[in-house]
Structure formats: structure tokens, C-alpha cells
Length: 196
Image 1 (cartoon, rainbow, N blue to C red):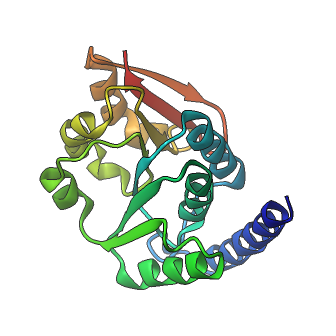
Image 2: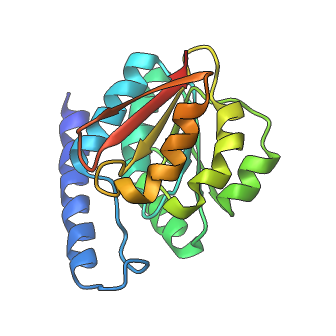
């Protein structure tokens, strides 16, 4: 119990630091743009309820969502891969995970997500997509085959706050008869996608 209280305090302070950083940068690419705390907590609950063992995160940034997911995986004895194109941000995320002794759960990869998705043959119980939205349409054919057909979930962030930017992607998903999706109003809007 005390460990969880300490974790939540650390995460609260970290989120405030990230918000302060973002407030000083007008260029969106220089902002960290981390997931909202309520979304991160919801994802943590999902991972634990699903008893996820293999997780993929696309878009580490500075690791806020990564830490919530890794903490949940520490309860399910799972592991995760997280992808980030910016080496400095990935290194920053790794430092936070080390602080919380969660670094053994996370495989940090500095790589182009599309290249990883093209090459990867593993399936995942849980995938979080929170990256550059203009690439989502290109990702879909690869994401679809990486979702575990036995209860796997793909969760996409920012589907309400940036609805226009993800509309083409959502249309692709909704036209794919193999999948069902549901959007919930948590944080910036999360879409949950799984096999029918």
C-alpha cells in the first residue's frame, strides 16, 4: 500500500514538472505532451484487469504513461516494449523508471515506429498508441496483426481532443469487420479496439 502511495506521489510531481515544461514551449514538438493522469490511471486498471503479459507502447515521450503501464505490469508479471524516435526523451524516461525500480519491466527502443511495426511478428495483449497522429493510417495494417486475437486491446489516445486528426484512422478501424471499437470520455478521449 505504501509503495502505491509513493508511486502516486512521484507521478503527481512528475506530471506537474512536465506541465510546467510544456507551458514554456509554444512549439508542440518541443512539448512533452504526456497522457493525462486520469487516462494513465485508467490504462493501469485495464492492464491489471486484463492480466496483460506483453505490452507495446508507441510514443514513449518522457515516459509518464510508460511508468503507469510498467507499474501495472509489475502486478501481472508482464513486460513491455516502448518506442520513441527521440533518443534524449527515451533516456529521460529510462531515468524515471530506474528511480521507481521499474526499468527491468521496460524494453526502451529508440526507433521509427513504422519500421518496428513492419518488422515485428509478435502479438501483444495490450498496445497503447499515442504518437504522431498523421502516421496512424499507415500503422493500421500492422497494428491489426499485432493485437492478440485472444482478448488483446489497442488503445488510442486523443480521439476526442484531436478527433479530426484521427478521423481517417478511425474510419479504417470501423470499416474493418474483424474489430469492434468503443470511445470513452476519459482524459483527451480513449478509443479501445479489439477483435469481435
